[in-house]
Length: 442
Image 1 (cartoon, one colour):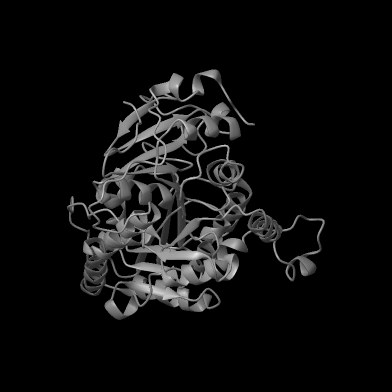
Image 2 (image 1 turned 90 degrees about the vertical axis):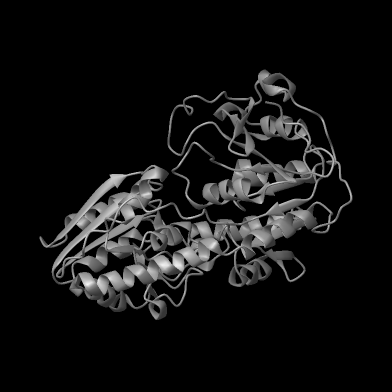
């Protein structure tokens, strides 16, 4: 499989992404791009430049050929081994791949966002239009994640911005001054995220709201077991790091009366934070049981969510939250923070979206679920499923995403004029991409 230009009338999009299929540990960005590839259709043609292994894995995906373009769903992917994920390797791959639009899915990813922007600024790669989706990285909750070391007194550390916040603010200032974002169109998933982008990047930044695409809900593979009064089975499914706020969730459980169970699913992104979480749940009273199940394959998520009474995610901030809509679709009411676009859940009996400075409200919601019998929980489950399926069936997000990429490519939606990619070499696997000569970090 080659990765030539999209052809007459087409729009070729080169996507740079830390992880892609068949990976499953990377969460939202992977699923967003997968849904775009499968749903946007002609005249869009997607090519994904990504790593050849999943998060935390030491070996490449089985069955893929590193360094060669190959079909993945309705798109194509070029999987790079670690030694080729650097300035030199990315430069060769980008120069050898015809595209109309460069699509970046992070603001702070050094290889898959910073490096391409730097290469573009230096004109080491063709200067094509860029769409950059920060994926919630500019949300105040995401920026604030991080802690000072032990050498900073605890009282002082509590009044200081986190070191990661300072580092990110410095990078944003330097990258703006260097002109890395000239000609960039920013993609926001909501009006709130658009406002954050403008606040950080300036009011002159070109920001387009095009919400994340979600997959069509899979047919239910089985009925939900009746809820037992006096018991609450909660599920946490996400990457384990400070932003997702698992420690906050664990700290709530001891105050809930009755039998409490928490199933934790997802990869460990921050080992030190995970150690803190383990210490918290090991100190819980006997009526609370917490189990860690590790990462979970995507095709198992639906059945797992149907086996729990509530989905628990007190996140510090999400630009969208694919895992929330997955829970809703499966009829699992969501108990989440108010730092996501999913608001007003209680009004439609789909769950609760609560402020993080009110932990007692989270405990009260968990207690309400624990006290529910089968009939009451069935009503909430039906409300959650109805909301999830309405969002999955909404076609406005697809229209907005198509318009975003049409215009980024310099073409009005629905225009009939033919377009050729701005540069059109046709790579033929490893050798033509220049990757057979190595190229690690440059």
